[in-house]
Length: 187
Length: 156
Image (cartoon, rainbow over the protein chains, first blue to last red):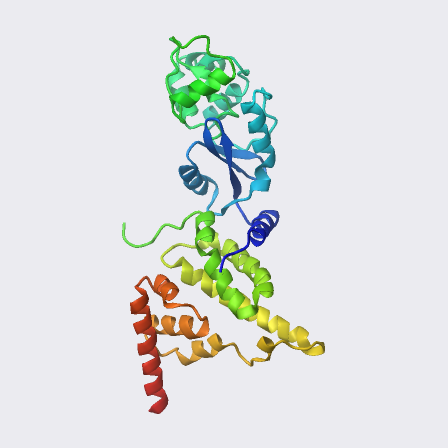
């Protein structure tokens, strides 16, 4: 016997309302693929490019009680839609990046300040946080960025102008920079 | 590393077992009452989930929770039925599966599980096999040899 959609939705929302889950997630369709988006009661905590791996990661980092509750991600999905339509240049979402090392936190704070449509380099970001020789360490922080797109690690490129790397793959990085009009030329 | 199946994210566990749980509850309680019991079952599962150490048999685990919820629901409806026309289910002195649980307490574990799930929960052999981690045919054999053993006990 199949559970009706109505009962299923009621259970999911009641579980979230009762505070019985560690995090809620949903999927968001975007021009760069289906994104896995997750939130705690404190704020948006994860965006992943691979939904299956995203679910495993969320379960490992925040707790196993993770449940798909679309309503909890309504604002996130709407803001992402607006961003991909070119109508939004800044996200207005509370974030929950959890307990992370101090260096990671200051780098991510600094990253959040890189404006829409502009790029910076790993070295420049390192200098901004007072460690001008830590470009590589900044690269590691970018690689582990739990909330890509919203924390715009796609705006960080190599000193020679190359895109260098991206957790979601270079084509996605390029697409995001093109969307923002940040890529001067690709030839 | 030996033993211990990793406990999956709750979403995967829920998606995999929700239909079986609802089916069992609907059979025991009727479709309407099964809806509340369904929520309560997975609420209890959520509360216990952080402490789960092994995911070896999550289906049997969640069906046990559902059976307890259904029993509570039976008791509750009996308490409230004094002034109302009781429905047929609440007239039963004890639900069949509870009797079976006592009757089968001496059986080997596999036979006992098969008998209780078949005759107490009315699950088909496909599902019982899934719970036992065996084929439907093996589940059928376990149930029938359990029943034979019970009959022998009754005669002796």
